[in-house]
Image (cartoon, rainbow, N blue to C red):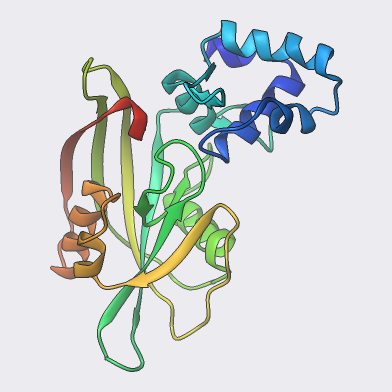
Length: 238
């Protein structure tokens, strides 16, 4: 987190812009700062020096693994790091398909770093002084527009490592909840693509989280438990 403490407010804007895209051009990053090319180069050099941003083979800029993790642990509303262990709610939102009668779940395809394009469930960081239930309801409201009851199911520990170096990327704890859409329509969320799927259809997705498969099994089997899982990801997929 020391790197974030050294960042200028304009560099924070660039970090936020980078987190919302797989890669960006120099001009795209410069646009969010309102600076001229010469002035912006100073801030870009700082981000590169801190090993938060790097240029790829196509000449575009990407967040490094360190930059992605920093972006993932940053509260942009407060312009400060989230100062607590990685604790996140994972809410399994379900509905009965009106045509087939099958149970479907709402999944979000991430349009932000890390794990760009991965399909997962509705997540929400737990902030200081906030109950798990409040965080889950907040995430549901913000990401779907729904204000429905949530039911606590259990906990799930997830550790992510870089495949080649065995470097720890994240060690986080999910608090699992389930909720029913109650037949209400959901709204779009700009940071993800939303789609209702059965559990089997989710299992067919190429970019999915093993943790979400496990959580769905926990919910569908009516379990309440603690699940521990370890995953390894190539650097380019994180």
